[in-house]
Image (cartoon, rainbow, N blue to C red):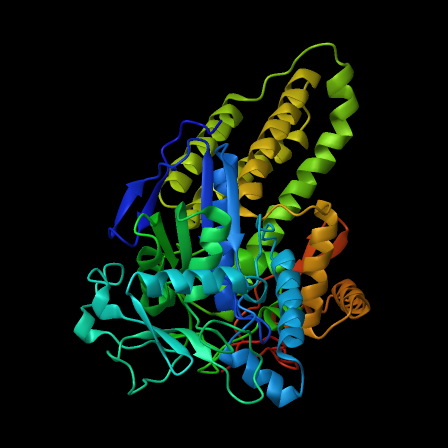
Length: 525
């Protein structure tokens, strides 16, 4: 049974935050519009599906049984155009990019939805829905095409707030002079020579863009369900048209909460394939760890726009490294004292500061997530504060303490790690890999961005060590600074020097003989 916590989410329909109350107590039904699969997905797509993955995870955390449906549009003008360019079967091309999308989602740690229907598998449901709309006098056939008659649906525009006279037909179709109203939109499109098509009562053709989601959401969730979501660009025309179609076919159709995520922008312009100002998920994760991209996209509230920035992804990469390095240090410390803790014959209590820290993290986590999934404050404040407390406890273990004091700090680490992992899991930042494996992956990405190998860095460390032994501290500083420019930090630990990724320093006036670092990262438009 779902926990009794009050979750508030912003409802686009009512333009305000509302307490979430599911139709069926303890159960949540949600439908998120998926990709049109004709190419690799870009980070605007990542933003949407990470946002709704966080919602999915948090609802499950609250104890709800969640049925999460996310579709694939595998029949579309863009797919047909791309397939023709490549001389490939449209469904084969689309299936290929559906699989590539799933690879990206797994890399970004987005949980698989309960159902992932494809348009091509639901033609019967789509045709049936169109027939019902026609029988209710809200659509008309015209030379093999079928159009929705917006004039016959008085509440058209209630989601977007547009007046009927201001509406256009939609971004994916050309205005047809044969239509009764220019805002009428296609439910079924008559087949063109050489195009893929399906039989229908109106002749061979294929669905319009909007009808698919009305049909598939009803097929998997019924005409009444809890949450419908997608990017803000879908409010009009896509979701507006979905409401019209669904209600025209079934007057009792209703969706209680409409949720929309903000855009990813590049140079303050919406990132879009059609504009060409986009970076694919693969391009970014080739240079940065997928967890860094996920962290970056959650660093802004899901409804606000986020501007794509290498500098910000660098910060997120640094943050993820800090998270996992702290967790690995914690794990090593717990392992070192684990047997002693278990065989001591007494129960050790975490320090007062730790108990307060755990309570504070738990409280902040629930408060911020229940307030329309406010992830930025968690990432940038509450989580960092808990990790700092973990490092404080680790530092205390290095001091000469009595056994009871030492084991109390170990118990503190156990309780902190448990609570931090709960937060990371709901945010989708907890990898199934060991901490050390994630750290190694982050280091590999840093080396790639720097254009260096581990051997190169070990050689630089040796050169710096020799320079310092020879009292040539200027050369030692040059070597260290040159690596810092490339995002590699050298750290002296006792008599040894280790390296780790860091945020590349902005080059200023170079030191004598110093080389400037490369920028092997996607980010220049």
